[in-house]
Length: 246
Image 1: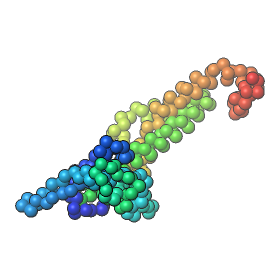
Image 2: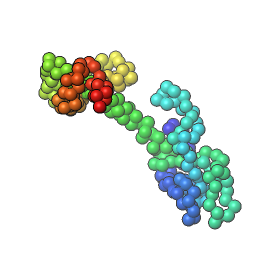
Image 3: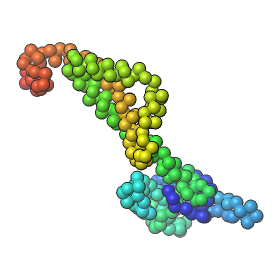
Image 4: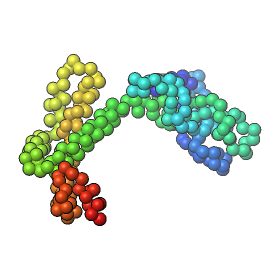
């Protein structure tokens, strides 16, 4: 992401191809030739179809730290340079790839850095907050809704009153108020987890009601009544009893 290449400043995106001169060779990109205008200092890039760079997945490259913690050298994909073609009519052999070359799917910026890598790096916090928040709310909704639907009675009443209180507040002002409560002395990592927990604690109500209603409907089915008549207890295995009876 931070790797710079002064030769490829403002390079255009590289399109992925599958066929070279009418023959299928797998995913690859064509290399670029550039010419520097000495008057305007502007680089003009042209596609060179003699430079065929096959794309390989899960390749090793420059070392980096995943999430700033784990040291790694594995990349999702990269392009490699192949040996020059002996004949223009013969398709390149991907097995002859010898050296890793730059592959810029979205092009490069004014410093020669890959734009796609910088987009992913810049959006990782926003994407992670959403994914972790949904995961927490998913677990809370299933567990709390399952308890309310399974036990019913006073447990269900308490859960429903809590859900009604949470849903009575407008979401955006409540998020803003809870976010403002976070101490300013917290590190960015703690603030990240704090915002994630706020999102998770407010988004589980809809799923909890759906799980509760489904369990209450299943509890009244005929096979549950038959299991109870056969001696199954609320904490026992009704499925095992039904299987033995069949």
